[in-house]
Length: 467
Image (cartoon, rainbow, N blue to C red):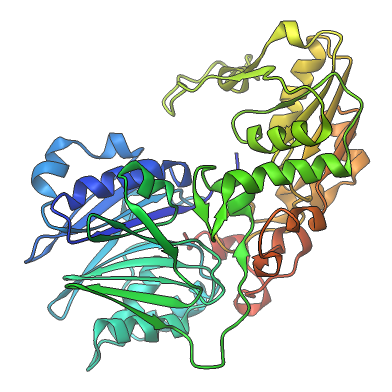
């Protein structure tokens, strides 16, 4: 499974701020499943609760009803990078400095973390975590002398490079921003007069909040009292090109969300339609691997005219604490999550439609099972181009060695997985599936990185101190 690193949520001036943050994080749970946290402002101080696990496991009625008092809240859910699944790295990250309390929730990866961390440590900063979000806090603190907190935040943003959407709670101010390239999503909404912020609009839908608009790349919002003020993090005339992460639309975002102004469901259907235009095999039916492949498979079936079947069934009740089988039951974990309908397989020519192939090992296991059940032919169609390059901006395919398409030809991948044919959606086909193709980062497909890492590239060691 591909992992994304974070989801963030904020709400201002709501009597049930902590509870709304809980619902917002619950809706964003697909973006991170290792830790969750909420920080509130009660008028005097920040209150926090963070923990490891899923949102319903971390919070209970005592936290939401009694401990997390206040009408302003910021929340965060997270996947960790390698070696960093620790409670001390759970966010929002909270500090107290010169009479001000600051909580920060960050989605994305900075590419100059090591460089900035070394510089700050030489100046006396002491780091408590291994997350790059803490770099923001120290930079803000270093810029607070004689400045407002929003001015210090803007100064900090001028030093960092990489992908970030941030929500910062500074006493009674709520500050939100996106990096100048706009790589990670962040949206503004309103709930009965209260401004709300979230990585995806599905968080608004759960609490019946109105979606207003996405934040612009390089925009900072400052919410205080009855005002919502917008600022630019960039000097006039220095705006870089927008490079939003297209993998949000391919895989990460929930299909019922609006992300980067795009209807995710319709984008995925169009990816499937473009895929069918490029390569529709002569088969008995097409099927998705649920749930990620469903929406592109619908578009593929509608365009190709091929029957659409759910010949694989997903068990939606498999939890993270499922007891692991013994070693001799090698494929048991895969079968617990997704299992074929045997009567649909024997003697059939099948085309599987899915959204991506990263390492190929899980798909290989599933195709092997279809062969054992008597499938006559197994074809595979992928609704994004081959992933050939690591991502340094917040997705966990972080080295070329992990990427099957970076090291093998199409025919080699076909043989490894056990396929009769394989076709990936072309980059042109992918871009025809979105409204503003010029605004997307395609680095994982073509190696064209909009933001280089310090020193020209990121190593695993660099990524292990980022979030």
